[in-house]
Image 1 (cartoon, rainbow, N blue to C red):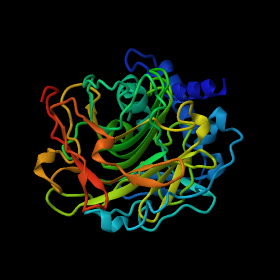
Image 2: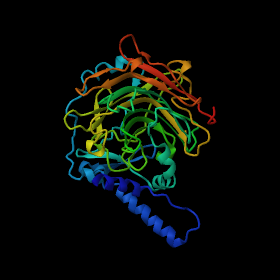
Image 3: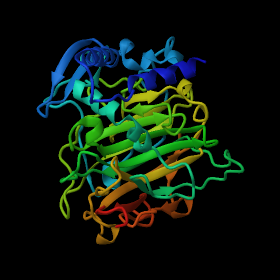
Image 4: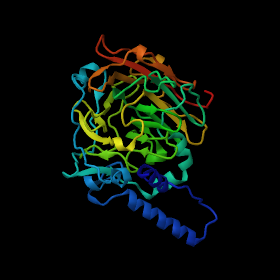
Length: 411
């Protein structure tokens, strides 16, 4: 019952509404409702940081962040750090990848005071976009496709390497975490209704009504963020985004602990075609003691925050599927945007999208390489393509290339 009340809260934050034929009284009521919802989303700030790009981050009391508006987390005790880190996972990351690690977080040395966490402020314009595009948001969000027989359509498609899944025995394959180094790019000439991401997904798809998912990576998404900048983004759901979940911390759920790296922050510098490559090491794994799902970034293993196990039904124990790759689409269902860096994998490294140092994490918090026989490729649209899983440098990990220019839906 508490879980369902939490879901209802999420849905109430994002109702759709008409924008024409309204009286002044109706307009005033809707403006009042927007202001009420902004107060729910934006918790009181101890300190406010304004970035040069216009982003506003509020340093919010860690115990009063939006996460704890979820009914299942009312009495939740915050975990400030993981109980352990995956063995040897962070060793020599810089030497295993061909790219340079991006230093992300609040700019100009800014950091939130101890006991607070940086949360990107939701503006009135953000909320209006979220409300007016709510139905389309449900179609695209950051979800991984449920059916193994993946079909492109509805302005949304994928190019991913996926682990096997047996619908007759959904617990045959068990995963307790995954990681990769993602090269990160700018995507110019982006339309306001397009979106494109490079992500890691951990999924437990017990059935079509209980598709629990966690996703993390980079995205360009004007509908969510109001611009075409490349940003750190996450998402979660327990029903394939039909009624639950959201991106970043825009609904109760994700517990933020880092004082300097907020969700939704921008990346700089970015990789360039046939030039220097920059990226980020992303780790998602289940804490073996608390069973919370942690997000860790970079070779210095910075804990960003976690998704409490209480949020989930199936993922409370393990994932039965992992996807690595890209997703892209258009809310209006017309021209598809670029994926990766907008070039096909056959152009080679530094000229297309790339995932490096692919790893699985087991129940004992030990990591191992993702090998070509562990996954299979899915790319239903001719707009994009996917390279094979290959060795990074000898026996020092595996990688793959992905992406494409997009274009008309048929491409």
